[in-house]
Length: 519
Image (cartoon, rainbow, N blue to C red; front, side, top):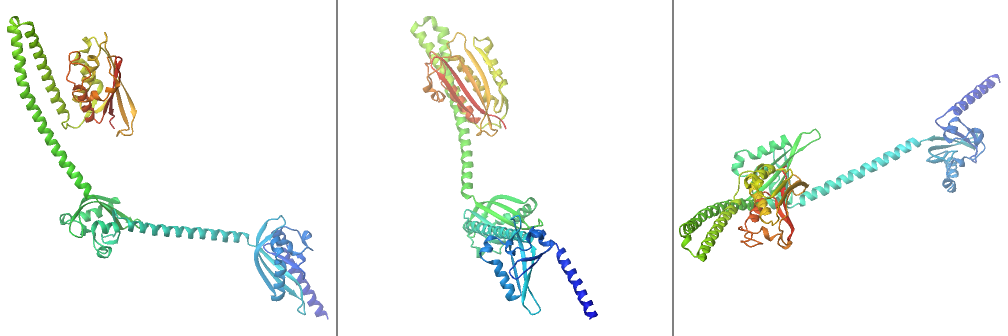
């Protein structure tokens, strides 16, 4: 009897320690339920996870921890029913805290039995797996994103390979480190004549002429590709049928993750027609230069031969005026004077034509030309200081060109401004400005304005006056050959420039010279 009593006391103390242990557990919610799910006991872990104190929750049904949608579907009762039948029910899902927030709980409900195996209640163990669930969801989302990226990459690679394979205007070839062909697109088949089956596995040296192979050109291009990343070349290449085409090629080195060269891509374009056009253009330019030279020589000889009899006419006219003027009638003397003037105009015209033809001649490379110096020299040569005309000039820029032609340009323009002027005091103002110009290599153009107070002309003639032999006034009133402005236009064309004019009859004229600024 005493022994039994001792055993009962030991069991009681063991039960108390067990209950105390359960009550102190914080990472798990451990709850004792009666047969209907009413809460009978509540540990610290349950208070921590669900937010209720023991005083607030004991006596209430465990259905309070479930969302309304789960309550409506009878989930709590279903779990108890499974535990009754199977002894245990496990479930994961969202649970509700006291403050209304939810957490992801892993629940195990276990049926409790008496000595006769009758169910007398349930234990309910809940663990908060919200962090694990969030990590799983993040992992799933990351895996889904990664899978989407992989699929997009696969599609892009597929599209890229299809695009390369279908391109017909460029030969796109994949080669190994030794130049052996690994892949071949439709453009390569079209340009070079081989099918993929015929060429894959063979070396790209097959496309080069024997002379290029003998001097090691293919190997040099591969070496350059390795050293510089890319190699460029243009030259004759060989098709399958032995015919040649002019190919523009780019060889690009391909690298692995460790930056080691593992092969090459080779892109070739057939520029045979472009090459033929360029060769024909060069031949034409050489022929044109030859013809221009012949024409200049002809003009020189012709002008010399034509001016010779004119000189004799002038000389004999001078003799008539000097030796026989007294014996000539007034009408005869007038005829001699007209003959002299006509002969001189003819000589001036021949000289201007010769000058015009020389402007077309290809000159030496352009140099820096200070336009201030050019204009000052022109004014000095014309002795403007002693003339009744007043010339004003602002600072002018330096351009890239030919000083001799620039002097011709300003001499003609300033002379015209003074000649076509009936003012008591002719005025000529020369100014300039730099403007932005996307069409110019440097992005800037110089505009030079030569403005006068002369007689002007009707705007309808603003383009006609730059044509050869075009005159707006009679020879007697304003002498000249009608070549000056045509020469100006030709000079500016040689300098990639332009000339225009703004004028009104009887008022004034402003000639606008445009010259590209040097880079």
